Image (cartoon, rainbow, N blue to C red; front, side, top):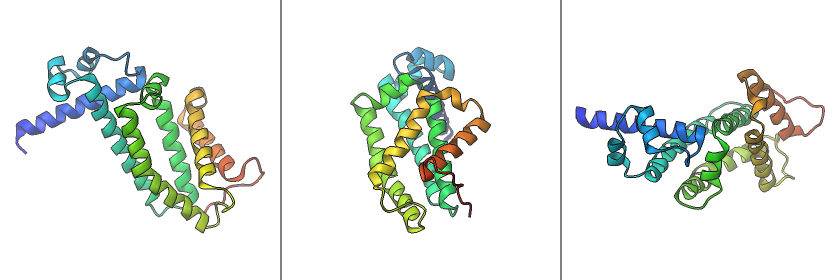
Length: 201
């Protein structure tokens, strides 16, 4: 790779990261190419030359974000940590993600049909879902998760609990509070409201 190509890729990376940061904070509709260009310290022409349109830039920046999240997800799932530690870390990751997305971005990405929704569905169903199933099976084999609760119910609980974070961001204002509530959510996931402590290996 020559110097020109390296600089080009670095600039594209900078634009994608800047764009996704702005999309996350303000939503897609409220962010213009002009806003992205100003924040990334590049010209609007450069963005159009690299990506063609704001929609294409959204897809490319979202794809990169999903790849990063997938890598972090697999790192947790494939680690040698105790099962409960893995679930706790995944909870914290989902909480951090939910906190970083504005309601406007969530609506744009998840509530509307189109290329972005299809991309998210692909990563969720084809890349993450099989690994999550493997992790839940691991919990069942260890006797930590009861076999009487279906996978569908487990996924419903996980999704409902993490989706609630989006509605109550004030509960996660500090890292300490996030850790505390994620542990409480973890306890609720495993034991409901029973007075039992999570066992540590």
